[in-house]
Length: 156
Length: 371
Image (cartoon, rainbow over all chains, first blue to last red):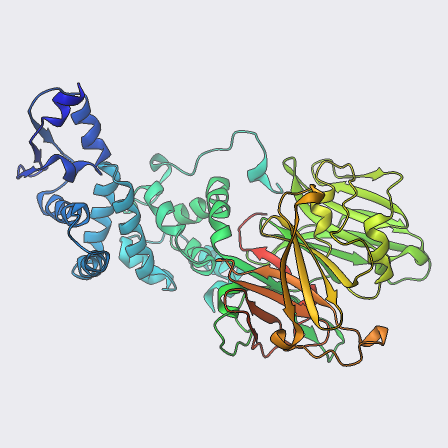
């Protein structure tokens, strides 16, 4: 079994919009959802549909995985990459990638995205967060005023 | 219901998608939880106002428990500022240890803080819950009670475990400690050669008879000096007592005991020139005492003026370690600032807090939403 598994050379990932990505096995190691699928098969080529991830997002995730799987890159280069990676994203990109990370069961990438979002919303206003997550308040003005009063120091 | 997240009964999961009254709020709750857990408590509390589902999520016992599990990465001190105008403690304030180490001037203004109500002493804190002790000031026997509070959420319990004590054994002579053990919170009180334990789950006191005076004896000797009472937590874990011999017998000056990073420490002054600290590396094993450090007063930059006079004598109380364990924070009864001793390079600096803080009664603390 082990020998057969390692004989897989190329993995094909098919995104929700039909776009196709061919990656090496070490790239998908962190994607536990994909990995467990591969582990159950004993064939040389695999093609895996990912109906919950869009092509653009999958491209970014693969880019991230490639960088972090590389043994040639220094720790500093990876950190620099992470910084730029987050910088070019809008808030809804981050939220979508977080959901994709959750779907693909990618522990460290999930934590990385959660941190990026947390850093953006920490110490921000309630209105900022509603805007960020596109949430409409369902409190009545009285309810909200009372809740704010209860936690007064948090608004100073 | 008090302290609900520690009960073993099955708690309902955070509101699921079906309960969402807000159609735009479709982002999965487990991912929101992941993000919230990375925020400071101030932001988390503030974001209760985002929507009803966020409020439910943050108030949920599962979230509170997850948040508490992460709290050791974010150590705080509970500071008790003193208001000289009214000659009383003005409240309790939570402050992150990492910010004390920054070598910057700090004024406590917007930190979470709480008035002590009808209580006047902070016994200690556990899981973010702070235990307070109060007493009546009427003539005759004294009523004594406990309250639990959480400075973060503003929660204050009703009076708990009220009891009456004859005046000569009253408030000032009580030695207390607060701990979490066997799935409940307990307050241990030593008074007039007797020890009693209040268990929150039973809401009653239990006496431990024939308590030996060993450790307490020397604490009583220094009755007017606040002594760090942390050792009790270890001693009473099984509600039986155990006699632990300090490393060197008893002929030491200014002994203190402290529980830091789950280890028992014993410290004292050596020949009017050094401060010595021992660590019991394995709790309860007297052979495991090892000398942790010996610092000269010169290095600590402490003033030993008036050494021979009891009430001028210097006392040093170890308060806590920084998160990385590199810095020990000490309180001196003679200084207005706490001492920051760097164990790596052996240098000492001082905190710069502009408020009037009674450092020697500060307590180790973690911020949580437990209530």
